[in-house]
Image 1 (cartoon, rainbow, N blue to C red):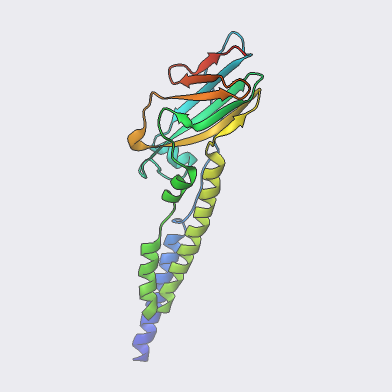
Image 2 (image 1 turned 120 degrees about the vertical axis):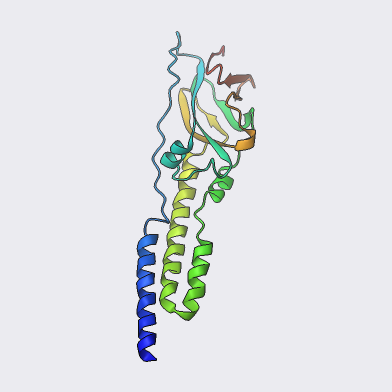
Length: 211
């Protein structure tokens, strides 16, 4: 009986080791930084111009810049660089797009690594053979660490409603529910001094304004 018990224990330890090796590459977060985009349009007079450049992400872009396929999760990321070459403060708002924008926290939560099912599976086996608890613990810790890094990166890259000072730009991502996304979109920025509204769109990425 002791021989059988020892063999069972060694087999479980071996399975736990193999599982650990397999899990070493599962729970991670590795994403590249966003570059600033340019419109490629050169205005005759760079003063008093507002403009934006954009890139609609595909799955490869999601995996490269976000390390997660958020499109499969139901969100279309759009990379936007907005530039304010005026002497006024402009209000940029994610609520002023022609489609609804999802909150960054909501998208990040849906993109989290979820290893609950595997951890439960290991945990049930661990009740009878304790070495099987090791992969469950390691996997859970790795997932928590990856999700923390994901939250920080999504927060850093996501665009929020904000004031854009004179002669400056903002750069980041908006997330649109897939069912609401339209590749021909527009948004409005507002001059905080006189409440003048300016609309930019995929068909008009640069606007000469009178201030």
